[in-house]
Image 1: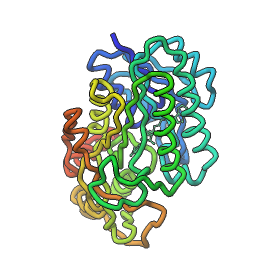
Image 2: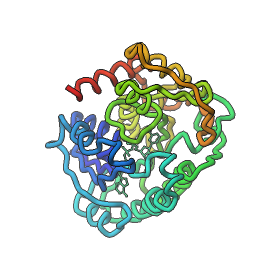
Image 3: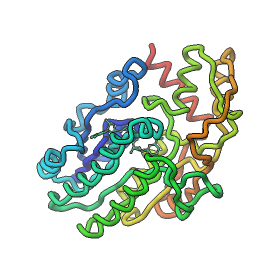
Image 4: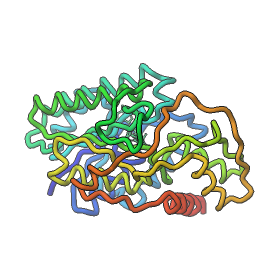
Length: 321
Ligand SMILES: NC(=O)c1ccc[n+]([C@@H]2O[C@H](COP(=O)([O-])OP(=O)(O)OC[C@H]3O[C@@H](n4cnc5c(N)ncnc54)[C@H](O)[C@@H]3O)[C@@H](O)[C@H]2O)c1
C-alpha cells in the first residue's frame, strides 16, 4: 500500500485530499502544527477541524509537528517512510502573510527548505508535491492565464510561493525525486477558516450582516470548489503524467465577486450588498487556463459557482443544526 505524507494536511484543502486518498486505499499520515492564524474569537478552528475529519478521523495517522523544527520533521519522515510527500503548510492567507512577514518567511520559505532537506531521510521517495498559488502571477496580463503567464508577485505571500517553486525544482533535481507543483486559486467551501472573501460573504449572509463589495465587486476571480481542488491534487500526485510538471488547478472561469454575492443573495434575499472603495492590496486576477491539467491528468472540475455555493450553504446549515 502506498503511503502519502501530507504536511499541513489538517487544513482546508489537505483534509479533503486526505479523504480522497483514504477512500482510494492509500495510507495517509498527516503532519500538522494545528495552527490558526485568524483571531480565535472569530474563527471556529476546533469545530472546523472536527468537521473536516468527521468521516475519516480514525483512518489517518495524525502527527503534530511544526516544519520550523527540521529535526522533528526529519524524524517523522524517517519513521513513516512515505512514498509521496505533499507540502501544504503555509501562512495560507496573503493578508496575514503581509501582516506577519517574518512568520510567513519562517514557515513558507525556511519551513519549505527544512522539508526539502528532510526528504533526504526517505528510502523510496516517488514524488514531492509543492502547493504554490495563482498569486505568483501578480496582476494578470491576460486571462485565462496559463502556466507560462509572466510571474510578477507583488506581496510576500506570492513571492514566497514563487521562490518555493524554484526551491522545489532545485532540491528535487539534486535529490533525484520527481516533483509536482500545483497552483490552486480562490478555493471555497465549508471548512475554510482563513477569512477569504468567499467565506466572509457567506458568513455575513448567515449572520444578517451586509456583504461588502469593494470597487463595485467587478474584480474577477476563478472561484474553485474545494472538492474540485482536492481532485486536481489527487490526479496530479497519483498519475505518472504529473511528474516534473506544474499545473494550474482551478475551475477555469473568471467570475466577478459581485456575481458570487448575488448568488448568495438568492438564498438570503434580505441581505444588503454594500459598495466600498476598491482594495488595492489584491492582484487583479481572472480565469486560470486549466487546459494542461485537463489534457495531461484528465482533470474535469465538476462544480459550477452556482453548485458550489449551494453545497457550501447546505454544509453550513447542516453544521449549525
Ligand atoms: N485556499 C486557497 O484558496 C488557496 C489558494 C492558493 C494556494 N493555497 C495554498 O494551499 C495550501 C493549503 O491551503 P488551505 O486553504 O488548506 O490553508 P489552511 O490554513 O487551511 O491549511 C494549512 C495547514 O498548514 C498547517 N500549518 C501552518 N503552519 C505550519 C507549520 N509551521 N508546520 C506545520 N503545519 C503548519 C496549518 O495548521 C493548516 O492545517 C497553502 O499552502 C496555501 O497557501 C490555498
